[in-house]
Structures are given as structure tokens and as C-alpha cells.
Image (cartoon, helix red, strand yellow):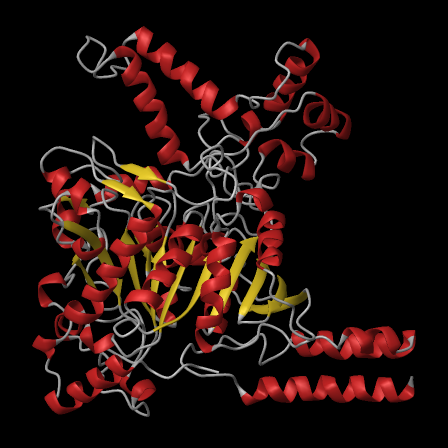
Length: 640
């Protein structure tokens, strides 16, 4: 059941009723985006600026002020969709399409759609990456410009992104203003984001405070999201109406994920390494090749390498600036990169010529060990079946975000850096949990398994999802971690398929889009398609795979991702429940075949394949479908 609105939020609704909220009392006009370079007026009302995170920041290390850059896009909606709600909110006038105008942005007063906070991981990946490459109303196209996204998450929700942690993107702290470095940790990142959310709902957008709120993200956001959810539930539940979370391809638990986040293990699974070579390397040579995500993320690892090299040469020496034209600096950097990225671990038998040969053969046959930093990669580091060596979106995005007119449009020109995604001096981050923290934690350190046990019973939805071809965070370890949370599977909620309606894409979209976005998009509709597998546990916890997707599900499978979001927001099931274990064991083979036919046809049809609106609650049609299946199962049992 859905929880009741917190008393604080109900009082806020009453205050809005009595005050008859005016435009000047709502969305911050000073943050409104009137026009975006290379596009023009945004397709829905958008706002960008700063949130005060000081109340949750480490002010001892970072100084008295911590500011988080946010970018908000309103949902595509119209007045009719919100007319029957009890909320005192007024949607943007006009059609729910890509035709909002600047006046709509400057006078926008809110709507009743859910609010979704999207977080990318890293640590150190600004969430504007996801906004402009994965799920926002505008995406980077193949030439570095902006294009409309037909599968934008603003079709279902208001979407906001944070450039987090402090010191990433255009977020900053007092220490950075003075020329220093912002310092972060897992727990301070959670508390700083919680403080920013309080500012968002209290001061920037109070008209959205009573809307359902969800947190969704991927990768190291597997740590950000559960810890932020716990912080909100513990310290801001009277202000932030948190209903659920969805965590994708996530850092979860080192022990459960240690093999599935190993490049050697993954390469063998997908046929890039023969059995005999894998057996030699894994069991005899004891090679282990945890990928960059397992080691803490490319930004953190790059910071470690840079600090090591600077420490060797010394900031005061002639080599202190790390001049890449200096041969000694280049050689030391190369050595550090080999140590951190390509060395097969401390247990590797480096004295064995056979082991050295096998390791080098592995590197040569696997795009340098499925490298996430090699300039000649031919297997994409985030999507096994994506095109290799053609991903220029990060470069294009950095160029776009550093444009002076873009910084002006986003109201971040006063940030103490003109470089993006990081300031020249970088940022510092300390991982505190046993999740994507290879070699950095002691036994007994808690992981997200412990956090899920704490927060899932307090939320309406806790979904953990994983692309089933992700080279960074392979699904097996994530699935094992969710099993180790220890919640029983619900009756009939066992591992089973889910489906979605795959529609046709406009040929102009296929011509304009970046190569890595939507590689499964087609100009013809293919109807109900296999989306992946799902298992449901007690306490509203579920694990779901997304078939054919790599690390960034909204980017690689945009239609399936939008379908997934709708189910999360509405609380609708992805597929009907299976018959009970006892029933499956008792029925005859003939009856089982009949039941399987009925179940599969139901799972491949509405309401399960319908795109949930995001504002409804569990549809009666879902109950009807389960009832039909139940009748067939009952008849089979009787016949048996």
C-alpha cells in the first residue's frame, strides 16, 4: 500500500490552498532557461541554478558554503491531465508536446506529475551526462548539437539532475573558490544531496513538495541512491515525499560482485577467452582483473594516478606541473596506468613465463582487457554489442558544457571553474562502503545489502535493475547481492520474463541520433518484445534485467527504460505472477503446457506491455489478468 503523505507536506498543501499560489511564489524565475545554444527555447519549461547543500556538507574540509548545480525539466503535461487531482498545482498551458514557449517557462507554476531525481555515478560523473545522453527531453546528436528525445522521461515525470558530488561539474565549495579541492565521502555526498533536496522542495519548487518523489540512477549511484534514500527517510521525511528508488547496473556489494566485475571473468563468459586459457589464468596463475568501476571509477583512479606521479616528481620541481611533453613524466604515467589498470593482481604468478604469455594473449584478444581507457578500443567499454571506437559523446558534451553561452543559459557563469566535468585541480572522494571499492575496505565493512535491508520496508518501490550485457557491472553479481539481502521471494514472484511494446522510430531520429543511443531502434514496429527477467521479494524489493542493454540502460534501450520508469512510478507489476511452486509441481505435463501458454500470452499483452502513465496506481486490469491466469491454473489443478 502507498504510504500517507507526511504531515509536513499536508500542511504545505493547506498553505498553498489558502495562499492561492502566484507565479512569483513558485518556480524560480531567475533560474529559468529561456533558450539553449544550438536549439532555442527548451521543449518543456526548464530551470538551472544552484541549491544550497551546506547543511549536509563537510564544512570543516570544504568551507562554509557548498553549492550543487541542478538542471530541471518539467513533465510534458496539460491542464486536463491534472484537472481531477486534489493538488493546488497548475500545469503549463498548451499541448503536451515539444512546443512549450519561453513564457510558459517563466510563468510555470507546477503540475501533479511525479518528480524524479536522476543521478549518474563515477564517482565524478555529473548527472547532466545522463540528462543529455540518456533520458532528458534533449539529447546530444551525432554532430554535437541537440535533438528532441522521443522517449524522454519528461513524458511521465518532472526530471531533475544534480551535478554531484561537490566539486563535480559546476557544483563547488568555498575551498574550491579559494583555489583548493572539494572533499567528499559516501556519507557526506548523501547528506549534502539531502540538504539540496530540502532546498529544492522548500525554496525553489515548493509547489512540487506534495508530488510523489523518486530517485533513479546508475553505476556508482548504486551507493549514492540507497544512502541518500536512507538520509532522506531519517532526516527529511517531513519535507521530501520519497516514494521509491530504482538503481541501475549498480555498485552494491564487493563480495557478491567481485567475479562479475572482473574483466577476465566477463571476457571468458562471452567467448573472448578460450576455456583452457581462462583456467590457466584464473586457477593456476591466479590472475584477477577487476574493471575500472570495481576499482572506484575512472575519475577516482585517474586522481590516484595523478597524485602518485606528482608525489614522485614533487610539485616544487621542474616536473611538478606534469608536463606531458616531458618524457620522464610520460614514462611514469604509463607505468602508473599499467599498474592500476592492466596488472593482473597481487597474487598473479609474474615469475611464470607461461602466465605472462597467457595474460598478454588475453589483453591482445579482448580490446586490452575490455579497457575503459585504451585509445584503440574496438569493444565498447559500456555496451558489449555496441559499436566500438565511435563514442564521441563525452567529448562533444564537454565542449558544449564549457561554451560561454551555455554557461550563461544555465546560470553557472559564476562557478569558480570554466572547465567541465571537473575543475583543473580535480576533486577528492572517499568510498566508505564495500561496494566498488576494491582493495579499499576491511572485512565487515557494510555494503548496500545492509542499506537495502533498512530502507526497502520503508519505501513503496525498491527496484534494482541491470543490463544483461553490461561489461562494467555484469548482472550475475547484482542478482546475487539482492538474494543476500535475505528477503523471501513473494509467492509467484519468481524469476520470470517481462515484455514491452517496441514501437517504430522516425527515420529522421535514426539519422540524427548519436551512434550509442538506442542501437535497437527500428523504423518498423515489432510489438511485444522480451524486456528481460524480474523477481519480486517481500518488502517491495525487486530485481530486474534489461535484455540486450549495456551499462546505461536509458541510453542503450530507451523504449524499455521508459516502460520501466512508468511501472516504477505507477506501482504497476511488470508481468503476472507465476503459479505457486506447489501448483507447478502437481499439474500434468499437458496442463502445464496450457498454463504456460495462457501466462505467456497475458504477459505479452496489456496491461503489462502498456506504458503506465506514472500518475495512476495499480490498475484493475492487472488484477483481471491475474484472475484469468488463476482460473486456468485452478482448472489445471482440478484436472490433475
